[in-house]
Amino acid sequence: MTYIGNQREALKGFKDGLIALEGQKALLMTQTQDGRKDLAILEHRKNELSGKIGALRQKHEEGANLSGLKQQYTDILLRIDETGADKPDKPDTAQLDLNIRRATVALEDTLKKQYESKYAAEIENIQAELQLARQEYRKKEAAHHNVRAGVECPVCCRPITEDVLEATRNGIDRSMKALVQQGVEKNTQFAQLRELERKAKDVFEQWKSEDTEKQQQRIAQLQKRRDELLSGDGAALSELLKQRQVLEEALDLGGLTAEEKMSLDALKAEMQRVSSDYEAMKALCERPVPDIDGKAKQLEELIRKKEDLIAAALDYLGARNELTFRGLPLDKVGFSLYDILKTTGEVKNAFRFTYEGRDYRKLSHSERIFAGMEVSELMKALTGRNYPVFVDDSESVVTLAKRPSGQVLLSRVVGGVPLTVTAQNQQPARQPEQEMKKAS
Image 1 (cartoon, one colour):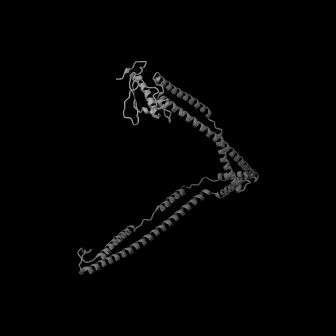
Image 2 (cartoon, rainbow, N blue to C red):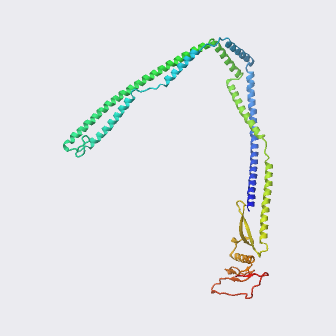
């Protein structure tokens, strides 16, 4: 059974592979068709761009005296080289370079400096004292609202009597006013310190700005002196360089306007992209085509062989079953020794019997009675004993076309009749050709 299951699993794998090959073939055909269309579009665009670029290049060459401009450009380059060759040895700028580095470091140090407050600690102390004064005032205020005869005095911690009630309130009022006066003084000090802090910070920022500006000016002066020392006859060289730039721009434009030159550059860039895409698509369309049909034929041959093996195995199982039950006293009853799973095709060991080719579980009641009697004859033959056969609900069958051998007990329900035992066919039953042992 496992052999057939393994073969069916392999067969399923081959069929899945064949389906995958068919999908790969369809995809390859679609890609090839789409690739050819895209290749034609890219080729058409290449031809369009080539025509536009050729027209602009022709105008670039014919619209200006390029040969004269090229000669002037060559002369300018020679003069620039001669000017550089005529210069004396390079002057010594080591000291200036050192001064520039020192000035640069000093500037960086100045920029890194940050204002450091001299009044921060004192300001924090005053803020803390004001916070404590506010808390004390709130306590005094609460005590003033709650003071009355019989409660404990918040100052002396003794019970308040009616004769000292007014004096206690006045005492609390005085302490509250003293706290207010103290708060006013502290707030005045706080404001003065904040003003001093602001002025000190402004002075620092002004000093930093002035110092930074002076250092930047010194660096600029040192750099200017260095440039002047190196330039020598730099004015003439600068003029030659300007002339070279003008000639380069004229050669670049040729007979084109600035707008036409920009258009030409854009067309060249697009031409490069289109050419790259064209070559890539061409390589894709010309790539070797895999032998999908050959692989499909190989899989079809493997599928055919697997199906032949499975059919042969099933034929073997059928023949084995036939040989197993050959010679047994069976007429309409048959046996099945395996089940085939519908999901995987796997063959499982089983033991089921059928009647007239149908599964016993799907038989009618009367058919089950007939099948049971035939199986009882099989059991007698296999055991060599002649057992009595008891048939219940015999009213379900019209007649026993083929009665079992030996003693047969039939139970039948008859309406309106009391329980009765009736013996029929008193003559001894026909003995089978082979003498059987009596049931013990």
